[in-house]
Image 1 (cartoon, each protein chain N blue to C red):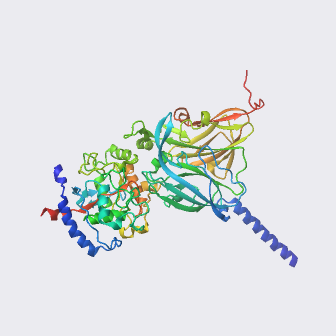
Image 2 (tube, helix red, strand yellow):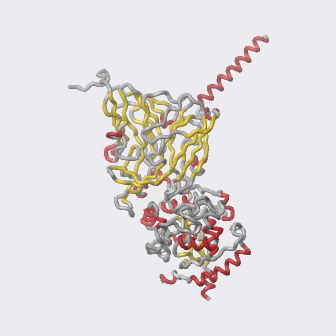
Image 3 (tube, rainbow over the protein chains, first blue to last red):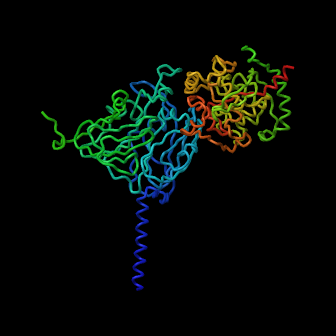
Length: 344
Length: 286
């Protein structure tokens, strides 16, 4: 009797323990990353400009990271040697790619360049807290602000400037991606690239000849002159194309800064084996075109089977054909006629 | 008609009034300028003031229907210049670069000046002074018997283009200002080189951002050092819900800038001009 009792209660405890384990890892409401204690001295995170991404987090535990970003207002080339006044994070469009682990404690220092005309800030969609940090990082020209957040939810997130007028700050290029890897990291792949779409509404500057600037009216009508990957026409073409070898698995971190358009992201001649839908935890398979909302992201993975040029487009095709939303992935290696064979 | 709105008063009159006002302030207003145990000395700048009759005006932030009555006031026709500020710090050494207290001006205060009483080599003496804090601007204004314009006063004057007192409804009004705002290093140019607006006021947009007395409208001026402010939903799309004219991108930019400031901040393209109650004018007319 006594023994039976014991067994019963033991199994009850076990069941409860099992159940609570499952609910920890399975429920989307549970922020497993929050459990991890960030340890050690803070380290400065390595960040990269597109199309490169920092090294995977691998097996490491949660730690304290410092991310330094600088907001700038700078002339750059938007297309065919036409200058445009971009506003940036770290002088690139999109801004630097930030790669962290869930549970990491991240101190974000935002410096607004001394020669900026305007205030800037940062709203990271990976943050749980007011404005995603926007309020805490409102930085006058020449000022540095800072806030610290715990990365609770794994996923691929957009960050952007949220200083009013926000459509203008984003429309000038102030966006980027932050990846929060789950504990243990994403599965290993052969190639990883960073691509971010954004559209540009332009007009001739009333002050400086030949310079293009943001056009408020076109933005309001959502009628851009350029829809671009990585802030420049041809940023993924010619010598800038991305590359892989036959048999390799390619992972693309694709974001959409907007400010307005939704992207129909597609790679001509490939099928996405895996898509982390909207950059979250649900993985879908065998996807031809994935929708990436403005202010959203997706992780797409595919194995390249045969050599050739694979064209990356927004499959809202006038944008690809006429407005610049086009890039190339060059795949080198052996033909595989069992998979693809050209007729005579 | 036009000239009735544009009444300039002479510096002599200003100076007279200033003496009177400073004496008054010494008794009544010890709170904001505790740092000046030394009384402020008037450096006697010569700048025309423009009479603004005031009137009803719709603030950029607020409820759609609420009009604010702006009483008549006087405003400097241009920003305070480098040479005027130099004269001010000579007369008031406590506001010199090496002497100013950090709580009243951050470490970038007058950062381009090679010394306490020397303008930068390449600086135009007639360019607006920048890299000065709100406290410094307040002290300057007080020293010359004036004050900083309120946000409502400043924005009231800013409604004008060259032709009309309120150009807000013109589609090109905001766009033109935004065009100006996008240009860098404008602060190094001399004042009064471009056309004045309807009131006869110069350089509201083309050179610098300007401090206002209540630069962060929620902030009580006495507590401004704390730097607490209510963002009024300024961030992301929140800013659009409380604005009365969501097409006025120029105004969004100004309010964003003001919202990013603390009273001891000094910024490379932020200066000021002075204002004054218009009863001063009535007094001087007698």
